[in-house]
Image (cartoon, rainbow, N blue to C red; front, side, top):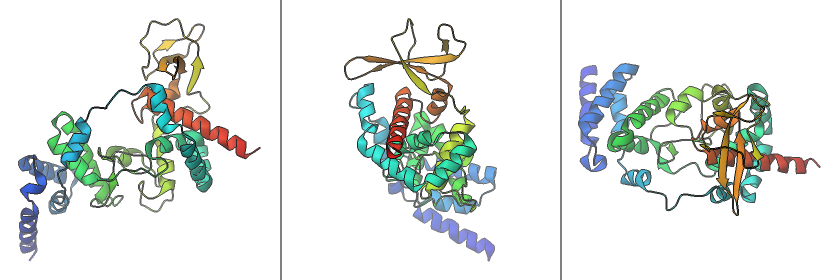
Length: 314
């Protein structure tokens, strides 16, 4: 009976594997992936096949990955996307609603509340914009029809299946970005499995629906990447006597009369160039997104939130 059930399941899987839904994909490559991940992680291959067979190749995801930006944003243009009164208001509402969790997580990790909020605010507008793509479709499409990053997305698809097996995500309903990032903090599956935290200790880490798990996970990510408590992130400066390069993420030079390694930033403001000094924690935030403007947006949103909090307390 068991053998018959397996044969029946395989036939069902084969019939559901329609060429129309897997256009531009080498199904032999997909089959090799299924066999490999099943063997490596001791997963039921029929379970893996059942999930993968329901993935849909999405040309729109390839188009989104390939679509060049209409223009390269200057800092003041990029800043205006995130540093808006409406986003600050949303952040303050999120802070008030989850104050107890934020305070506890900050105390345990050493990551200030405002920087946890800064990341969630920039990433998803406090859960308002978490992505509308089926994560399974996104990872499947990019793993098997995006050659220049196939290795990376194949790894992420494997971690997504493991997340599903560990019962942290629903593989057929989880939604996220076109690159497969999920939840309030937009974690890729490998980061989800490495850094996500079960804050409520209910044996389920849910970054898509549980803000407490998301808050703890963002802070844990920063802590794991070397966050130093009570240390600066960035400070404004006059144009330095410096020949470059500017805007490197990792501290690589020293200021006069200082032994502290820093990075120097040159950003285009609305009227003139701005100069900033980035410290170790600047680099830590950049591990979340490898962009100096992203780090600046997180920092300045965090500052706006702190200023609003101070006004509330007057």
